[in-house]
Image (cartoon, rainbow, N blue to C red):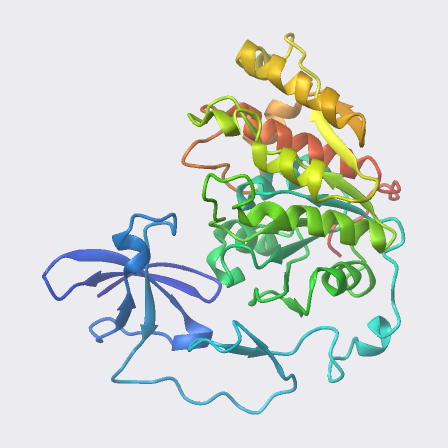
Length: 368
């Protein structure tokens, strides 16, 4: 076994398998300890064997010859990944032992905070880049729901953006865990973003690795609609980030994805803003968008305009912002050059949120 790299408590190794082959494997130190080079490890290999989108990792379940010591007693009694062999106890920001319990006990408003909600985790860096294009000093909280990866530790993008100060950190909601703050559900996660972290904007996505079956309702991104509803119920400004593409080979995801259309037409039950780019062919980034996809997207936006406020955002200058995004842009194996529409749609959602943040005094620090 050889150490490859680490980010936060996630540690990547090259492991030698019983058949003599090698594979990449990931350990989460808070749950299994820190394996040493040369030790035997127990692996979960089913996702890799099926070729699923786990980043190509086997998961280290245990170091059987050296189990981690019991953690010291600590406050908190909320179990996440409940009733699984890997269940993980945390202190939720909203439970009675939390130092923030009194702040959140009767809270029911996020005071107009813009909340960008996206289907895919890969949209996060582009959304953050767009927010800071419109309001460089904006304080951004990231909320990870439990529709896909449960451990926040898996996300290299969220970790690097937190370490660099682009976002305040991650709040893990529901069964997701490992964030700087833990929350029982999306409602208390949003309240914590605003009232505990004093965030100006919250961005909500699943963790990496969303699930879909190709059926009308069979996708984990339905959580997008639940988060939009929650943001409105709590007095926020929900902004839907379109999942869009002109490079996806699957017709159902070209233009605005059928996932986004299903959520917005059949799950969302509140007033919301739908951000969308203007198709300005003078912008080199937009000029390359497939004309048939652009026409399809305009028709889809016309359908959505009967239900929501459509915020059309000029993309001038966005290409430079996306090229310098705070974490690498990659979605479904494609980068900015291969699928610009995917990241443009995320970037303009960020711009739409950033322009709704009250202007801060010149020289303000986004995180301090």
